[in-house]
Amino acid sequence: MKQIVGVADMKVSNNSEESVITYSLGSCIGLVVYDPAVKVGGMLHYMLPESSIDKEKAAARPFMFADTGIPMLFKTVYQLGAVKARIKIYVAGGAEILDQKGFFNIGKRNYMALKKMFFKNNVIIHKQDVGGNTNRTVRLEIGTGDIYVKTSGEKEVKI
Amino acid sequence: MTSLQHLLEEVRNLKPIPAVANQLLEVVDNPDSSMEDIANVIQYDPVMTANILRTCNSAYFGLKHPAESITDAVNLLGTDQVIELVLLKSGAGTFSGRQEGYGLEEGEMWRYAVSSAVIAKQIAIRMKLENKNTIFTAALVKDIGKIILEKYVARGGRKIQDLVKKENLSFREAEKKALGIDHAELGAMIAKMWKFSPKMVKIIRHHHLADETMIKDKEVAVVYLADCITMMIGVGVGSDGLSYRFRDETIRELGLTADDVSLIIADFADNMQEIENLLRIV
Image (cartoon, rainbow over the protein chains, first blue to last red):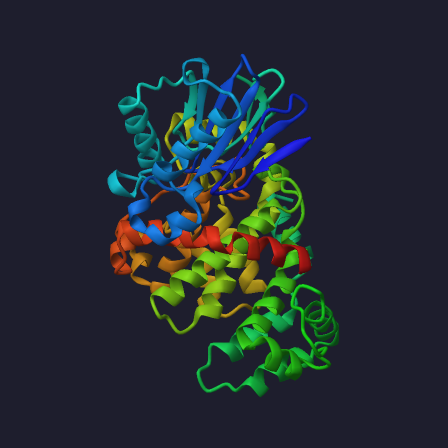
């Protein structure tokens, strides 16, 4: 079974038969969390760093933004028995167009928003594949916690 | 035969986009055109008419009374919706295939095209531009050159990727250097051969802003920005990835800000489901 995480979406699972996958991360970020002890995992696909830009949208679609989506991902996996100290974290995406500078660089801003939140909350990233000019598809196997990344035209690689 | 001659031969053999799309564009962006003028253009193409009526009467639109003519469809769904359906149906056949050279599976290029057309239209509406249908269509078909060029890109794959990685060229610049022509130039040649309007040819030719002075052209700038935003969102992006040049002056030139760009991205998320539905019914 495949659980598909759409754009501005989140899925969690504790079903060892399942994969959680998100397609085509450009400047968006795919945040994967996994607790190997209870085999609980989840994935968030957010598009933008701050919800302050459109509060109404953030209320309707909290997974669109880093600051509203990330806490919800953690809370949801905690409800399934995941424990913060055991959680492994993987980050992918945040790509940029060539010469995309400063405030226009949404990929980098998306990543910085996450880093800032993690720093404040003592969360460490286990592995990451961020930046650059490629788009990425990310898949998490709930049974094993294995994570695979694929870029267009290339084969899926386990990381 | 040289490879350029091969290329031209392939352009000639490419099945063109239905003429009704072109005729429709001439009518719709003329402020003096009436709903009747629009219906007449579509009715002239019986295959398209049948096709549109079938879609309009599909469960998706949930019409209480079936549309029996294009005039009915326009009355029931609105002119913009019917025009959009004709344009989408015109492009679907050409863009749906697999594009190996760009690492795209079947349907992915079409998904990208439709997404960037919807974004371009969103920007045009935000900016209150009048010819939003031309902008929608230009964004929809701007990558037409890729359909021919993809085989050549596939053959020169490593070389092009190396130019991108080692010489910091954009993918378009690398195409030009490795193959002597890029997909925007080739796209403009195809558009010309298909008798698209000079305006459409121009937008396709410049949709990556190879010539920076084209920033001043509002329609070019909107289609360019929509392309960048679609790349950032990532839907249907191929192995060329985000390896194109971003020119933030475009945003200022259009009178927009970085926050506007974020808002356009946020709006797009709301339109995603609609796009998926359109892809299904078209």
